[in-house]
Image 1 (cartoon, rainbow, N blue to C red):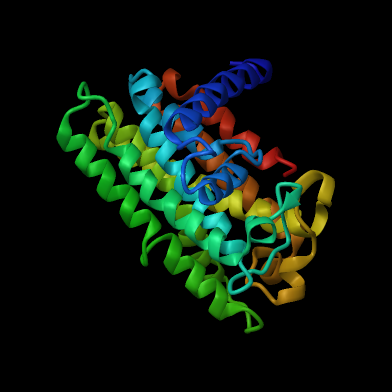
Image 2: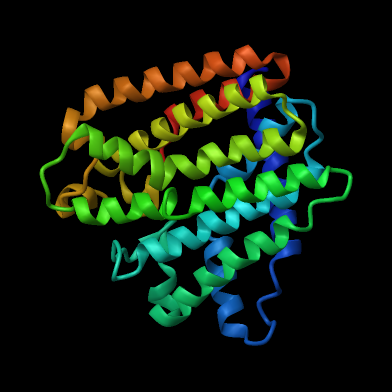
Length: 297
């Protein structure tokens, strides 16, 4: 698979995801309209749809077709979007822009933004229950547990708590790794595991997908740390230099930009090797590791 083929693969899978998201989200004029408008505003604000595509790619790597995995792909993107809405709130990171436009609470107010995030979180599990009956129920139950755990107090939320507590404090690499592996990495790891579990992966395949997700998740967040320093608004869609100004625990704060870039490269190389070990059907996963390293926003 060449770079142009990867671009075609990503475009096709992104279109599948976009259509599935639109089918599963209540229309913006559904009563009460303001909360549904806020959900649409944040969900369709742009973005690469990397996480749902990872669900599909992981399932395809173990022999599944993408269509039965779309409810799980949507569920992951709903949770990701909820987390961004809440992360941007004044009580959290207090960000004014996300993906190049005002954040949800800047448009709809804090209360509606909070409720829109809550609604997306609950919708994720409603949609997950719509996985077709062609997939055995024990796989669906296992996938549901995986996703819930990845978003909870020992996953995404736990990482957010430690991230907030670490602001302005002395930075250690151990703490940064905890934050990144939970706040960002736990959901990315879950994407690979959901696709594998629902796609019928054996335990060895699932172990490879898990390790791939862990390496890719950390590389993704290190790259995000670097882009906060080196990127600009036109690339990232958000204000730059915010992490350093707030005293956030980041890889560049510990190691500097160049050493952080080297670490991200090593992790992406590791992810690529793990994808190759899964066989030819995992080629999109191998190339996605390079895509994450090269991303500019």
